[in-house]
Image (cartoon, rainbow, N blue to C red):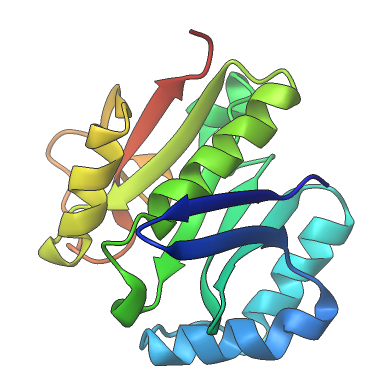
Length: 180
């Protein structure tokens, strides 16, 4: 897989595919971000990667690994599956490295990979509570728009009148056209 090097404000960022040797670093980043994940979450993602269904991407700078995301070629969300739209998931950057363009670089990298594979669109989502405020602003700024089906809960469209918890599973699904 090709790697890209992007320089902004003297922060040299390298985005690369995760390997088994990166599992501990992924767990450490998740812990530092105070995320609750299943014990074998990253091992499961690595199995999906080995099967060609996903890519785990790591952003690293001179100081070490500072973020990660998953590019899911076979997303659970029905609209994305039906239209063969890959989805960027679980995008995270360590707090001290935020607002330096790292998340943007990971998104652009995923878009480039998808475009090279012939994908016409890219999918992404954000939660609807304030904890996702930065993602909400960033994704819209990068050209992602709502898919038009309203909110989803655990990747299923919420039907009018349905009550759902406002937690990380309540999301708005977005798409971006990759063909200019």
